[in-house]
Amino acid sequence: MSCSYETKNQYIKLNIMHEMGIALQIIDVAVRSIPKTNDQVQVEAVHLRIGKLSAVVPQSLTFCFDITKKDTPLANAKLQIEEIPITAKCRDCGHEMIITEAFFKCSQCQEGKLEILSGRELDIVSITLSDTER
Ligand SMILES: [Zn+2]
Image (cartoon, rainbow, N blue to C red):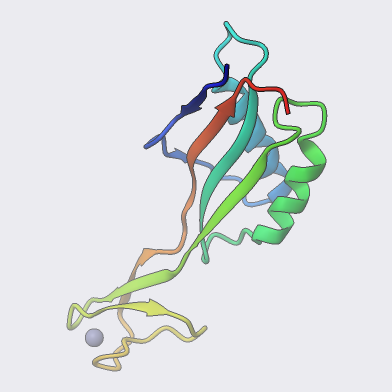
C-alpha cells in the first residue's frame, strides 16, 4: 500500500538569502507537513520556485540541501527547482518584458522606469510525501 500527499497551492515565503539557512527551512517546513499519525512517511520531493533576482543559486541550494537532509525524513528527497525569469513592466508605456541583461530598460520605448513584476520568488510550491519503503 502506498499513498502520496500533495500540499498544492501552499506558498510559503522564505526570507533568508543564505542557501544553508534556506535548506534548513525547507527541511523544517517539509518535516512539519508530515502527518503525526504516520511515522513511516518519507518526503519524496520538494518543488521550489526560485526567481532569478532572489540571490539564491540553485546549485548551491541543492548542495546544501543534500548535506542537511541526512538523518531526516527527507534523506531520499529530491529538490525540484523551477527558475522564474525576471519580468518587468514599463511605467511609461505599459510594455511587459523578460529581463535578461544587467542594465534594465524598456525594450519597447527605451525608457528606464521599470517596475519589477517577478524574479524575487522563493516559494515552496508542493511537497510530495510517500509511506512506501524504497
Ligand atoms: Zn516602455
